[in-house]
Length: 282
Image (tube, rainbow, N blue to C red; front, side, top):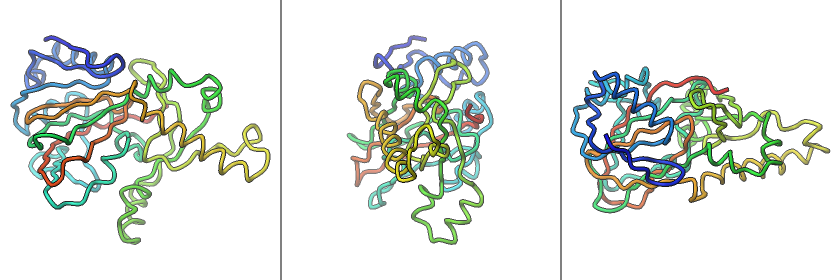
């Protein structure tokens, strides 16, 4: 196996490896897992495996999860079909910088995404290294956010377009989660800036150390959150991947954000994703 780094901060393309082999080959799988923690996203071309093998490979990392809105393939639980057809409205959640399902108490460990069909041009996906984003924050900001916690909501994102009864039912099923603004990566020990498009507000900003008068809280917290969210937009933290059929991306959801570029309508784009259950951030 050969590894080629794609940018100085995130992403590596792998050559000479068949992911299906890692289902049974423990040594190969452990090497892939180590590379994933190091590079945050791994990319491969020409991966010709079945849906059952897709699921079996992803399960080596852990149990798979269903998506409450997208659902999963009835014959392959845990495999979500993300199929875009001509004339379909644009997805408002893929084309925003986000970390998958941080509205869960235990957001996903990561994902294995395979391209089935894509337009001849357009439809790229981008990832951002949120460990590097934290590392390069100004020191006064690091001190300000060290103890902050924030809410993450499915109701305010996927639920927003639903009728009120369905939106409230979705929130009852998945109450807003609270996570540290800076999480620690359980494998690498890196500090990760952990706010994204699902983050609605800080939960412990309104303290005497930060707020003189009550009206300070709203602009102060909102401006800080906007600044932190904008760190994913910095090109030096990003990698961009151009899809081809049977290309695969494996990403560490704990240390990255991603953005699916919606510049391809009215073409088809068909992707299949296996999301891996994660742990509670700390």
